Amino acid sequence: MGQPESRENRAAEQSELPPGQRLQRGWPVTHYGPVPKFKPDRWEFRVFGATADGDKHCWNHQEFSALPFSSVVADLHCVTKFSMLGAEWGGVPARTVLELAPPAPEATHVMVWAEYGFSSNLRMADFAADGTLFATHKDGELLTAEHGFPLRLVVPHLYAWKGPKWVRGIEYMTADRRGFWEERGYHNIGDPWSEQRYSYQEEPGDGPEL
Ligand SMILES: Nc1nc2c(c(=O)[nH]1)N[C@H]1C(S)=C(S)[C@@H](COP(=O)(O)O)O[C@H]1N2
Ligand SMILES: [Mo]
Image (cartoon, rainbow, N blue to C red):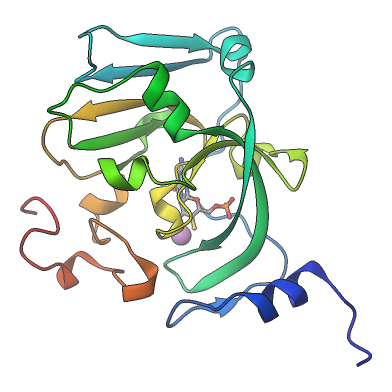
């Protein structure tokens, strides 16, 4: 009673926070390095590595923007312990990319590449999961530059570092390799519900040798 009915309040009542996380009001900006400038005529989304036909696939910005659009409601959990709940993300499902530029049968992992060489590795099943989405929009509006415009990955069931901002492509891999934060002490898998925060918590089989 008397509490404003904000989206965050409703989200907080409806969702449960993963262990060790606290609710963040608003949407902070968290990343390593500078915010890249978007150059529409130079931008392309590349699919390379172990593709089914052995070729690279490229979409320019106009082509990528014309791919089927869908949305997903998902929470964002930062490993530094804040969570943002109930955002509606709009964009292109990772599944669509898998269908249009399929991996070879031997591909087991995906490296997601972003501007300035930032990367994050995912198991194929995490990449192909229902909610995984290349987002262009949040809550009906285009992403802002600092939140990843023109494209960021959202992997609802993993910590947010698994979702690079300023994505430029994916690499299908036939063996696992660590991405940027996974090489620097974060967990190779990153499930927030089992608090897979740091690489020292990894069990045999969770990731390649450090
Ligand atoms: N390119 C890039 N993407 C990134 C990161 C980064 O350092 N570089 N940090 C990740 C981390 S740790 C978090 S918590 C989220 C934060 O997203 P936000 O700034 O939109 O809240 O972006 C993720 N994506
Ligand atoms: Mo984070």
